[in-house]
Image (cartoon, rainbow over all chains, first blue to last red; front, top):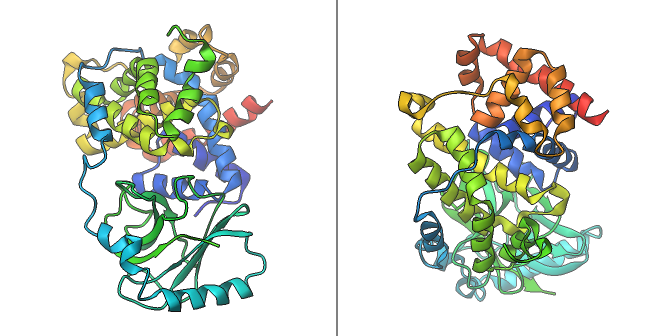
Length: 226
Length: 183
């Protein structure tokens, strides 16, 4: 958990920037950064202030071939898309379950007067299900994902949200969903427009260690413009 | 780098990378790879592993460039953070002992007197002044962690001090640094 005490927050952010936290703790910080202003401020403070220390490492020429190796990894399709790719693709789900999902979404919009002005909305449901379990709204006021059916990850695991831009080779991590089922972000990456999809996978505590889904995708939905 | 600074600064290049420009990423590599490779090498000690760290870091920059905001501070600090964390991952994966067991690789962690080296180079005068106000152990903890990528346990071994003592030095050092840097 992210502490509220200013000194505790200063120390935690400092230990994070120094690299003294373990992987799970570091991922928890990275996940919380998007929605926790005081934490963000503390982390950025240490990044800026300690950066001159990096000058103590002498610059050196990387081995020949380093850039080529990087460039090879940027090619779309250099890594195979995950197995669930076809499942998450919007054209696979947008017919069968959509009516039920849309009904849920309308209900949610009606009872959520404080939600940001909707621009993009999505209803997420199990790949073979018909009833939406989550709704997402992205607008000028930010992005909000809310559980509309009580879904819990398996014990010792968490739900993580992913965005898949249209024609993208790989999903973008959007954050671990807190236990209360509500995830808010300041904004969605600009690549996630109409035609993009959202997906939720089951991951170890703190989220996927690889930056890509490692567990099964359990909910999917496409972003629609309103 | 014949272009004006405004066209080749890391901030501008990262913004272009965020829009999907591979050319901008390559220019960022030309601009920053020697510095970042040096940081990685300092932490992981082995050239082949440091090269992998730099690869991973630039792929991460490619994927996450849109996450960079000026609010975060200088682009150089953001890039440094990415390389350091990938280097720390490599140390966790390979083990500090494996990486430092070879005497030919050298093993000379930073000591307080090298603070002088950072003085003239940047606007780091405040950081240097504040680090000098810390007691020796607190300062060593901060520098061993940041520059050499040492964990609490690594520092504990290096300074021959119990783990709990090291954690307390880090904590008190950070709090004192914060007060000094904000004054």
